[in-house]
Image (cartoon, rainbow, N blue to C red; front, top):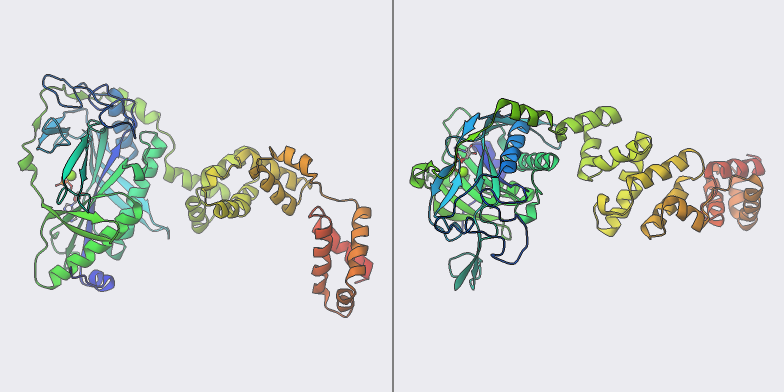
Length: 498
Ligand code: ADP
Ligand code: MG
């Protein structure tokens, strides 16, 4: 059994330092150095060329779009872009790397010295310094069959699929991040979340965590105090969800704290993350960079990024997510908490679009965060997949504003749209959803309600004015929600002389 220290005690006694290495798979049409397509889920070993397979004599050619994507990301992270940089061979043998080396960048990354401001749920901002973002290629995928763990140990045989071999990657490496204290797990997860949001906004990756488009290696070390030199780190590999990143950091802090408190030292090693048990386990003792015998790739020319080309890319960058959130917050007059809620609900874009389609900001927020969130929850889908468009919401909220519908009827319109009854206009005419504003029609329903509820009437006349709600409810029910509740209340009050 691995000893773990209680988390609060661990962060009281030690200062955690974290570092993240995030691999992002680029969504180019073809691979980093060859013409094989980048696809997901194809039959094994069908998306390959002699280059992906590392066959003798096959020569790589750099994918220009992949370089452009790497520059886009570098710029979005505030990095400097190298005017010239080279690829290098990182030499090691593993069956999923058929060339016996990975083409990567070592001391000449395309982008370096950047930063990303990470905002936590409560509005606290931590600046994460980016050491570099470099280009490299993905490895193939090994599948170990016959064992209980899916790992090579205990497996009967292994299969290898080279479809992923050569898919372009950018690896973003942070500097050691200190000063986050007990919030280290949260910051690590939020950093990767922000990064994923950025690559999505840049349109350079599908950024689907569950497909491994974004994979994080999580480095953690502890030291006795913030003024002490950095402690020995462990690197937990391939942690592929935000929640797992948070859990893995927390686990390593607790484990390392117990090791250090027992007077032992932390081993510098890679570790595996186990999603089911929420634990990490020892991987391999970490090799130093020298072991890889990096040397410049002789089959590829250096990359030259002219300042003009880079400026052109800079000018074409979209508004970044954090800037957009700041702008929307100001435009909508929303609080941090409200912005957070809207972001968590995946509603920011929908609300923005609804306003673009003519709705008032308050109305767009009210419908998406209220009734439509409720409907999405009930169906177990994301807001964006609900099947109500921003235009529909703008249409309905306009009709409420003009007095054509009340909220209750509007809800019925959304129900109809979701039931596939057509556009809001079609639902309204098919279901005959019109607000009864003609007092005559209302008065008949009011007379019925009064006649049917003598007890309620007596109690209102006896001073319990709030009991009027029961009569209003009766009228609303009788008119299938098509009455204006405020007007009904007025008319009842007049009738009863209160
Ligand atoms: P490697 O390839 O050996 O993993 P990298 O330089 O690519 O080395 O990445 C190391 C990562 O670990 C970086 O994010 C770095 O900031 C982080 N790191 C380095 N030293 C420490 C430490 N003592 N504690 C926590 N993180 C560290
Ligand atoms: Mg690394």
